[in-house]
Image (cartoon, rainbow, N blue to C red):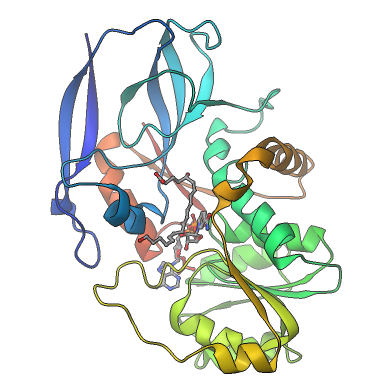
Length: 329
Ligand SMILES: NC(=O)C1=CN([C@@H]2O[C@H](COP(=O)(O)OP(=O)(O)OC[C@H]3O[C@@H](n4cnc5c(N)ncnc54)[C@H](OP(=O)(O)O)[C@@H]3O)[C@@H](O)[C@H]2O)C=CC1
Ligand SMILES: O=C(O)CCC[C@H](O)\C=C/C=C/C=C/C(=O)C/C=C\CCCCCO
């Protein structure tokens, strides 16, 4: 009998998550049925969606949601062989059983030089978010001026580099000088630390005096109220995330968006990356190619030890991560 360690949501988050909101449990997994495989997590993903989705999708006591790169350690399914690696949505657990329907084998051939953890970031769901958000929602064209926030993160860094590949001028912001230096190193035209600029309005105006054709929004809230008013005529806004709002206990009331949207004839669209699940292979193939060619650089923030999952999650929500936040078992 295999025992799995599982992080559960002990209490629904009230405001910013606390260590006491999580509880580590040990569960015995049943024997495999025909068609099932047993997997062991190797790398686990830490993602912002877990904060809002936990409210929506979990009951107290449930296993925390999440994805991982896992290794098949026992198989009663001829499609999945022992030793193979797959991306799964097994949640915060050391081991789990799958019937294979929700497993995504790593793209092959997976280059020896690339860490398989990239399948959780640049060559995974965040990378696909950037890819489809940029090309399908922002609909970038060469010469566009693009703004992206949380730009040193899993999604934002891919957005900026894809936009450069697409011939855009790219402006990004992040919450530390180290992250800002990284943005310039990977090709952003302008980058600033939104925490230390005197005025966000002035920083955005200085970075692009003529305004922005595209805004890839990962943050929402007050930042977006200000960015919205610097959009160019017929600008496109991809509403990808609103991490500045996820921990609010009460809905904030910002300025209203209608007047600048009408006046500048803006297009603003929210999206979830699963919209393009049927084009996953297309996106992963393109991202893998650009990473292998060195046109997309990646940076991972690795925490070691399953016992550190809650701390790594809370750290990511605070901005402690530099690049894609992952946990190594
Ligand atoms: N729509 C979709 O399908 C998807 C949406 N998303 C969204 O994309 C966004 C980025 O996700 P991801 O790249 O995985 O995460 P990141 O790797 O960017 O990590 C989160 C980052 O958010 C920034 N942040 C945290 N709090 C605030 C705040 N109050 N104000 C401004 N920035 C803040 C921090 O960076 P900094 O140092 O810059 O402050 C932190 O490092 C999130 O909003 C997420 O929900 C992600 C995947 C799919
Ligand atoms: O279990 C689930 O449904 C989550 C599966 C996540 C999966 O890997 C695919 C897509 C991830 C999407 C992420 C979306 C975001 O980060 C946007 C976050 C919040 C949007 C508002 C949600 C409000 C809920 O009350």
